[in-house]
Length: 314
Image (cartoon, rainbow, N blue to C red; front, side, top):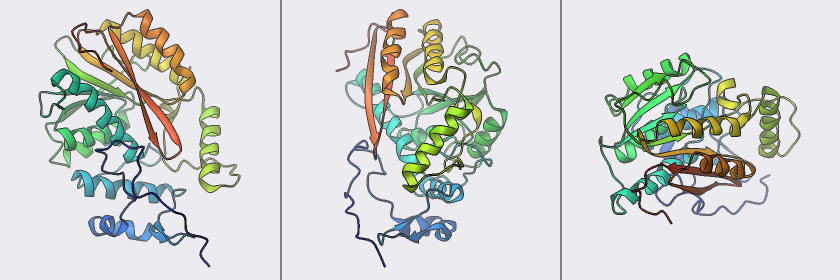
């Protein structure tokens, strides 16, 4: 017997208005595009087609179908255990940062290879460049400290014609650095994007995963199955999100003439006060906080610039 059917909104209004994922997933379309998804799609207790978001393989196949249907990605795969990010949230970052960039271009989002974007922590999935190339035809440089991530992302680039010649990868050889050793003397980036590791230890990452799964399953889970994956460097680092972002802000001062807008996700609202303090310490010309929402989750982008000619951002 089916439970009382939930009333779902026609649109996920918290997502950016240009986000292709505001509507509920159309599994018939996705399966037609990616038949391998069919084995994971079932009718849930409310009578809706869905997948088991508790199942890492189902989540990975959903991502593969979304990237193929919406972003023309013919090949996409990641090594077992590596981060499999939610596509709608990644798309939101790209669209919001595009709006920010439009302030330099009389309110019109610039498109094409003239725009250079640095993705700090591109990961094995290469998702931010995929979305940015498809939506705006930007050029990307992706960085990572993990060799396997770089190799995986390179394979995705090589096997998709839409990405070839548009995405370059650079290995960060010193895990304590973020921009040093990556930005070269003659480089100029219009913007940087970053999804920092937000836990400060393995134990806290594990506890966070258990909390997420408890909410997802609405029952107590003791074993942390990573349905969205994630290696240690993707989920946690010494000092957590605030230490990582503090280092990024400090090093951005050294490269203030090499990039117009620096930006990063901030998952914890309680970290904003410290972030603003660090930005004031390095004397940025302007900074902006952009709030994003997906379901019950709220996050935000903090962006800053050292360029005094930047038009005022409201």
